[in-house]
Image 1 (cartoon, rainbow, N blue to C red):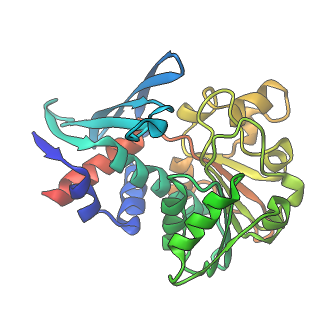
Image 2 (spheres, helix red, strand yellow; image 1 turned 120 degrees about the horizontal axis):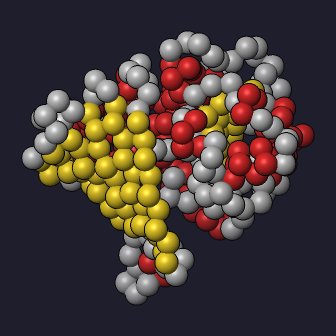
Length: 309
C-alpha cells in the first residue's frame, strides 16, 4: 500500500491529465455508487463509495466543518482521504490525500463536460464565485478551450473577485471583474458557477445563444445556482444520474415543481464521452450539472497512482 500525498498529486497532475483520466473512465461501464452523510451542529461527514468494473473500487471519506476557516489559526473546512482498492484481489493499493485529489477531479469533471458540449470557438468565460474552486475551474476550462481569451469574475463580495483577478493577471488571457451579473451573463460563451447559493443566480433570459453553462456549486437538496429558465431553455446534461437527480436541489426542486422531468435530462458523461449525445447546433444553450461522486475520485486516484509509480 502506498501513501500518496498532495505533493505527489500536484507533481503528476495537469488539466489534460485529469480530463483524459476521466474520459477514459467513462468509456468503462457505469459505476455502482453508495453515499452516507452524517450531520451534526452544521458539520458533516460524507463517505462516498464506488466500484467501477474493469478499473478499481474506492472510498472517499471527508469532513466538512464550515467554521474551520474562521478559527485561530484558520483550518481547512474540508479534510479527508481516498482509499483505493485493487478490483481483482480486494487489497488496498493506495491512500491518497482527498482534498488535493478532489480539486483536480471536480474541475476536470466540468472541463470534460465542456469539452463535450461547449462550442470550439468560444472566447469569453464568466466565473461566478471566487472561492477555492474558481481558479482551478478557470484553468481546467482553458485547458480544453484555449480559445478563451477573456475571463470575467463575479462574486457577491467584489473584493474577493478583485483578489482572484489580481492573482491571475499576467497570464495568457485577460481578466476583468464583473459587477453587473446579468450583463456578464450576456457576454459569456461559457459560464462556470461554483457558489454556496440556495437562490438561483444565473438567469436563463440573460444568456446569449450558444452559451455553455457549467453548474458546480450546488450539492445539497436546498441549493441552486440556475433559475428555471436556464434549465428549460438549455439542453440539459449531468455528470451522473446517480449523484444528481435525487440528491441536489438544482434538479430536485424544479422536478418536484413539474418545471422539468427526468426525460428533460438528455444524458450523462457516459453518453457524452461515448458519442450518444452532445451539442446539436452552435445556437443551442447547453447546461451541465457537475454533481461529483466517488466514481470520479476512483478514476482520478487510479490514474494518479499509476503515474506516481
